Each structure stands twice: as structure tokens, then as C-alpha cells.
Length: 287
Image (cartoon, rainbow, N blue to C red; front, side):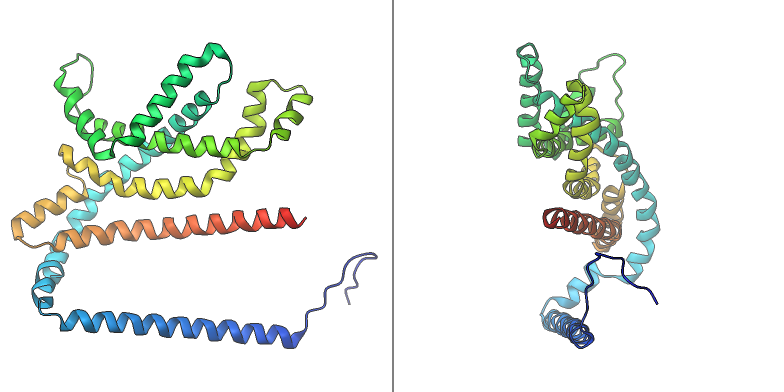
């Protein structure tokens, strides 16, 4: 028989109260599931009774068109994933550097702070699709020697510049959330300003901003479809081509389902990270 250590707090859980909580949890889950099923049934009934449902079903939910277009869409989606995997680490680097540049205090760094601030203001203010248009069509039109003309390159660069501005503000908010006592403690241990940021501030700030960064990258995965305006055959362009041949919009629905299949797991992971961070903060506050 295990006995508690001397001085340890012993918590007794009432079996009856625990059983009541379990029954309530099962009842709440059952009620929620029945409510969801009822809602879906009502929506499905209303859609089926609508006058244009048959035409919508033939135009957007044609099983044959779905089966014909899905393999090509899945192959084209690999380009979206490649753009995402290239852009994501570059966005993190650009965002962190811009955030650090905006927080430089010495007067000699004023030009750097001004440039970083202008960058954030401009690329947060201009829609991402306009950035893609301006870079994808404008830079190659200059005819500069040695500058690539690949639309995938400029589409990815536009995503990096646009999202880098948002991520920079996320990092800056995370750095500002670190209590000044952390810096003072690090400096009292003999660390200089760079070492304090590298070993004390940035690691803590990064942990704090992981949830919002995950949300930004979920949006980034969807916005890779914007590169289609430059011409690469990614999933949206593939859907447009298939729809133009068949005069049927089912390929767009298939493309949407492929995006959903990837973004839903990423969203649930972001929710789990946020919930875990909240539990840790509450545990720290109680302690």
C-alpha cells in the first residue's frame, strides 16, 4: 500500500461527485452531438427543397467531374506545398529581423528603425495579391540582368514580404511581453545586450508567439493559391483549367476540399498549442 510522504498534501476525491461529473460530461456530449445532427439535417432539408438545388448539384457536385479532376488537382497541390515550405522559414527570419530592427534603441540605428517601420506599414497596408502583381509582373518587366523571371520565385517572394510584415509585429509583441526584470537579471549575470536577447528574451518570446504564428501560417497555406495570378499551374490554376474545359465548377469544390484536408489538422494543432499555453500560464499564476 502506497502511503503519502510526510508533509504531503492528500487530496480525497469523492467517488460520488466524480461519477456525477462523468455522467454530466457524457450527457453534454450526447446533447451536443444530437444538436449537431439536427442542425445538419435541417440545413440539408432546406437545401434539397430549394428551387435551384438540382442545378447547383449538377454544376458544383458532379461525382464524375470530381473523380476526373481530383488526381490532377492533387498533383498541382504539391506546388502549393513547395511554395509554403520555402516561404515559411524565410518569413520567420524576415519577421524576427524586422522586429529586432524596430526595437533598436541607439540613435545611430535610427535609419534602420525608420526603414523597418516603413516596411511594416507598407506591406501590412497593401493587399497580398497586389504585392504579387507588382513583383510578379513589374520586376521582370524591368529587364534587369541576372534577375530571375520565374513567376514562382516572385510569387514566393511576395508572400515572404507580405507575411514578414505581419510576423514582425507578432514577434515584436512577444518580445515586449517579456518582463523587464528578465533583461535586468540577464545583465546582472554579465550578459551583454545581444546575449540577453539571444539567450533570454527571444526564446521566451518565441514560446509566447507560437499560437499566433501558427494561425498566420494557416493563412499562408491558403494564400499560396494567389500565386496562380502569375500563371504557375498550382491547384487553383488547375481547377480553372478543368472548369473551363467542362463548364462545370466541381473542380473548385475539389480544390477547396484539398485545402480543408490540410488546414483543419493545422487548425486543431494550433488550438491545442493555445490551450496548452493557457494551462501553463494558469498553473504559473496559481503557483
